[in-house]
Image 1 (cartoon, protein in one colour):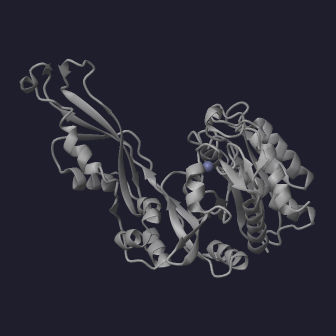
Image 2: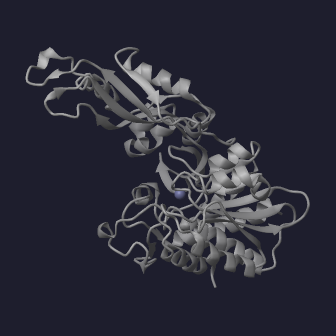
Image 3: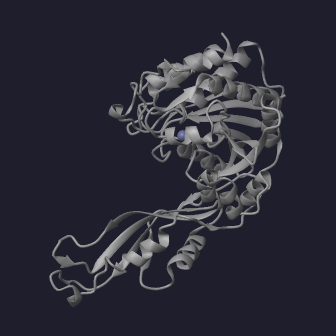
Length: 425
Ligand SMILES: [Zn+2]
């Protein structure tokens, strides 16, 4: 069977296993993949941190030297509300040249492409000349990876040890200044969510000036956070992206391509997004205290101090207090090396003239756990798509009518085949 058809079929099957997390229930999907991989000669192992929620490590051993290349993917998904969809989200229906269903983009498609590519190689008798090929297919990515990649990297480092990792995070084509770019995700931002509190004095709401209203003290704070623009933070990743695009900074990006700037500017600095607010519990009581929750994302490698500096820069020093509720430092891999070269050559062969743009994911992915556990490993997110571009794909991630063109499934499967053959030659 041709590689694109095979990827399409595996994706359809994967979508039909409902792996909405929570609860995940990844076992049946993992068993299905295990059978495919074992038949082709892989040694497979299911490793469970919670009942019914196995992770899978499939290995094809080669020569004694050479890198350990991990194709990474998660088989769980976020939920879907069928009422908002044009098709059943667990149908895997083929319609209008696309496979539809929850996970069609994030990320059963990549899992299907990785599996189809390595089955194709293994069935043709290919084995790593040097190094080792591993597929690491995780559970529980969408709910924090406690039972997935985090657990695997902490508890079974010998089984998932990696020098090179290919995961999700970027790869859709976009145009800028008449040039075509494919994103390669080189890092993940950190998460520094906090509660901001203002204080006042309670009083009867019928006599406004008798109290000191903590809620209205939020007005200037919200106003200061209104534009949603990050304060640019110099970093090697930002520099590499700007160099690739050939622009001098966010303003230049904004002028040239305002739509692209909306997607790329969060990569360039700390973002502060207010999402929840609470104050008085009674409508007739002036609140003595108000709380605002802010989702704050910080560039890789930077921590609380950077977040605080940015908060003070934006809101001033006084009139509020800040308490961090979540603190996770992001990490990244170098923007050049053998993996980047291999990806660049693949893109050149499929789409001559197209270039790579190193990007940082504003969100989170399993790459982070691998970079933490194996400091020398290089982990990138790359799932090439060109039948649908960045602007078409982004709203489908975790959204309704998630779907992927079958042509892009073929493109991605060819990419993984090419990377594996080249890096383990
Ligand atoms: Zn994902």
